[in-house]
Image (tube, rainbow, N blue to C red; front, side):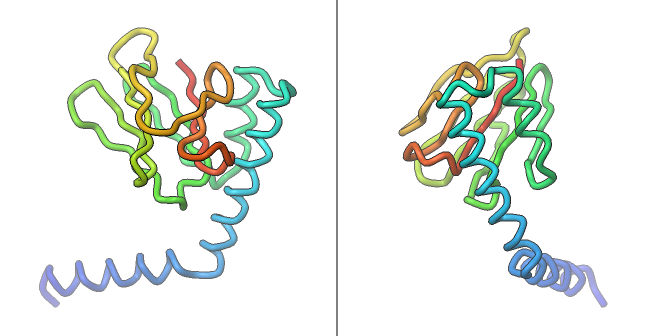
Length: 141
């Protein structure tokens, strides 16, 4: 089997895994966790530091550590992408024109720009898109 066939087989396996019942269960759990956390943060029941701890309790949360930035992304199944357009910048986007631009080289790192419809739920918690608590990003700088 040549490298092209191996790559095609690997991609087919990943697509199959992504549509499996277990993957859909993880996505539903992530959405549920994000909504619950956003609700708690809005009500003031969870502080800035506690939001990161609570977000990281769920095994379906995507965590990224880059330079001086720590991120926890709830509901990564909603089309969230994390890119590095240059050496010290992270962009977290939802695919719908909403996102965060993070200066990860600064100490401490900080959110340099909000793009589109982004709600700052608390000091370190952002909701991308409509304020629905689905695409939640929790930062720790």
